[in-house]
Length: 393
Image (cartoon, rainbow, N blue to C red; front, side):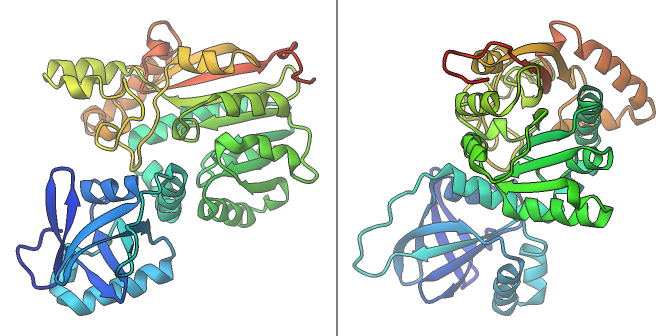
């Protein structure tokens, strides 16, 4: 928030210059609030983990983190209400997307070094949106289409298979339907807050006895092998998230290869490096930087539509990483011609004909080259009968 000279302001250093913001302070802790998720300054701070501030008493530096506990957030927001008054609070801070805590370096101490820990940022962001994540999906026509397509493929492929592994379960948009269909699911996620949402949903639906949750990052999936009484897994899936939060897919591919029996299916939903709608649409709009915004990894916030930096992968990228253990059986672009979820306003123009367009899109999405050029792609793999040398069963 740029408040145009309000006395309770500081400046935060950004790559493009100093940005004035409102703040509250408690001793060596400074709190900042971003109302819009699209604001650039909190992303720049959280990406590095360090903030450089110009405070009324001089320049300071400190370690930055998201405040995700609801009780902590409310106490901090109460301080903002008291500092700025109800009218200005409603204008600048009502229903904020992010609350940041800056722990200032003590006077005379060595400057805080950037932690550069992507996983901490990743976990905090998903903790921060866990309670509202369902609305993010169900409130967007194209996000609903993504889930409808993946669920249809999961149901068809996993029929008759009992024990499933889900990597990156989020708030359980696919977990719950599969539990209700009689499957048993081991759900893994980096966010404990997301896992708590899934457990609550399972209890409310009366299917909690078929759910087991494990807090784990996708790249550390090998650690799942040491979990007590882990069932023999019949299949696995990871759609629209966990893979694209990893700079390397090899560790996850090997772990899944060791966890799954030969012949077991694996379904992956991946944010694609090459999206036909963006390539064509942004080129026609003479926005070349957006048309090719996914070509280099990581795809930074601003070039992607996500609240964190992500890693986009092509079909060949994923094939290459999983080939030692898995053979691809099916590929589908999702969506193939319809717009991505951040451009859903284009789809809304054809709301009355959307169901028909979605059927056409699904048919094209299973044909080359459209299968390789969707906003995302759904790939179905099968665990090879003969794993790499020394790979086990």
